[in-house]
Image 1 (cartoon, helix red, strand yellow):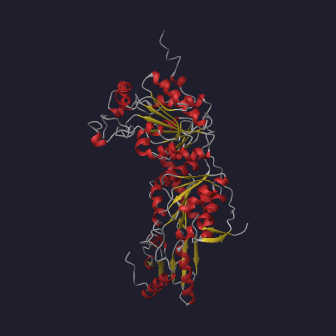
Image 2 (image 1 turned 45 degrees about the horizontal axis):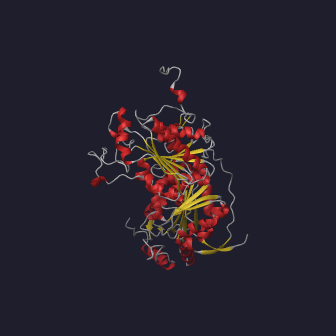
Image 3 (image 1 turned 135 degrees about the horizontal axis):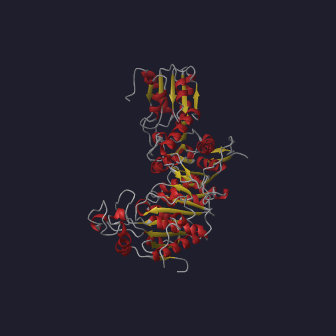
Length: 363
Length: 254
């Protein structure tokens, strides 16, 4: 293979297909639209099915049905469309169905939606937030693996920059350890055998094969998520060993943070950066370590303050945490606004350094 | 003719093969078990016992999913036709049957069933229509007929207040993607037999790849209707059948 010039959405589509995705459904909404277009164009040729659904609710439920047969299935939208999908994402979690969901978000305001969710029940969604297209390609493949391995919905938190940036890239299939057999999948062949299978949130089973019931089933799912929390947290930390100040950011924003932190370090400022790669599970232990002894922990996110909650929970000294991001939507409504800029970020970091730890953010 | 000896013919003898247990928790006089029996018998007769997936919605009929020896997926209220779409597209050789009530399909899920019909999904969608939310205790649905009393239309369905019932079969019959649309009932032996033939025809056409197939079955819910158990069949005829006529609304060659 050689590198080709691909738009981020096309590259993610190819990564999904390379992962064995055989079903995709979606409802157009920028900047998710191009991923849907790419899947519609590429998936049938790979032997799969792509449906341009009549609503986000249909799209996610179709994908859930496909996943129940054991096929690798995915859907997606932007945060607004994902709001409509929350019920089914929770259902997928409580039915232990592997479902990959792409949020090609219009900004960073969907952190709570991704990490807390709006469905019912004790559930979680594994969430990966790539910082650029190559990482999105790797994350897409990792998500299909994690979804199958843990039988859970798994979400890619992308954005306009990732969806629309064209890069020279080779979408090479990644290797993963073997997965357990999908002995829960429905294909109709167990019907009439006396041992027919059942996928049901309430887990009551059938007369011949009674299930554990909701309490035991849901506790087991909660235990599974606790285990994922222990084993699957991923992060990236730069220059935090000797840092007095650490800037925390996720996704595309981190590219700007890395640049500014590098510049300031060159000036002699003892500053580092920390990026949760998994938004859930949040890499809390690693953040605590990275912020040990820091006088300032600056959180740069393009929203009114969402991830800062997790940073406050896990930072070595929560009183050192300050929000330096803010609401930042482009006038088109499709992408991040003026705060996604190195100059703006540099100014905000310098101001925070000058103010020092005494000046606390309002929250 | 002498009366059958109950001891010689225990109820278990009449249990369809695809039922793991005949013990259910539905109310006396409920029409659903009769209707579901027709489905299981049709699947067995057509040799689909080992290649059927049931996609069930939420309501009293969730019992059927629990008791039947069918690979089953319980899905969100209203969404069965969308879920079944994903199942069938991945398993084109498998019979996929959705089971919903009128609250599930026509109130909550009208969007899903109409679009699945329009797309011509090769599934068989079953509507057990008793004109009321039975599971919640007798509330107004989108198929509650005019004048019908429910806990949310205490003086009877009034078009000025509650609007009119929806005939979803008639809507589906207009769509190019649907191959078969029929409405039966289970309030008399003759209609039970006729409805069984409709279900069988729908499944045959699904397996022939003809398109979306749909059978609505009018069933009794004396509990939800606030009538005596034994009055259910006659009440169904007087109330629902005046609005929802029995027959094939669309079939190949028609």
